[in-house]
Amino acid sequence: MKIQTSRFGEIEINKEDIVEFPEGLLGFERARRFIVLNTQDGGPFRWLQSTEIPDLAFVVIEPLQFMFSYDLEISDSDVAFLGVKAAEDVLLYGIVTIPENPRDMTANLQGPLVINIKSRKARQIVSANSSHSLKTGIISEMEKRAQKLKESQATQASQASQAPQVPETPQAAPKASKAPESPKAPQATPKKGGKG
Image 1 (cartoon, rainbow, N blue to C red):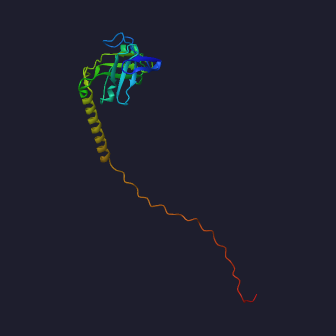
Image 2 (image 1 turned 180 degrees about the vertical axis):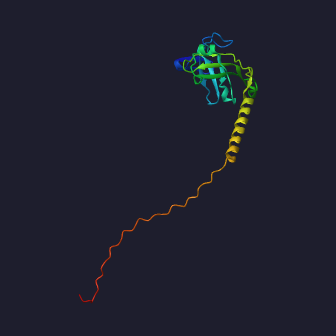
Image 3 (image 1 turned 120 degrees about the horizontal axis):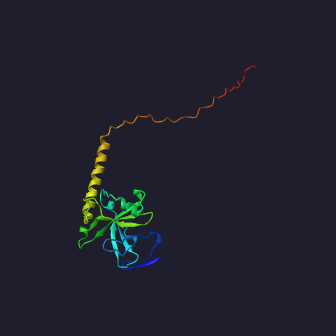
């Protein structure tokens, strides 16, 4: 199916890839059907493009693409509404705000988008976790994440170097084996000039 967009022109999409927000998004209640589009550079950002309103698109990012951890508790009513059966059936996005200085871009992790990837049903929920912010700094969190990963790798390397080393058992180099020689049959040598 084809849809019109103001940013990308006319694009071809698969109908089964459409994500439905039955209640719309906060502040955009009449926009209910969206498609998630990858960026051309293959980076962590995506576009959440309305299939109904050509001018409506949001830059989104998965929290674990820039944070070390993101603990979101989804209420029982949200789980029931979305029809979620297992955690791996859920995809999370934060809507990104990009100011004049892109280094100051933020993601809304207080109101994440929760998508059931099996049913394609979605809802923008309000996180009960008070540590989640409407404006989580993406670059600063990426830097923290990189530092934690670096520290984790250093700890693992240190633990590996301190682990008792099992000495290698010296082994003699294998000797080249010769094929056994077949026994030689004795040969009679005739004598010359002898009497018989």
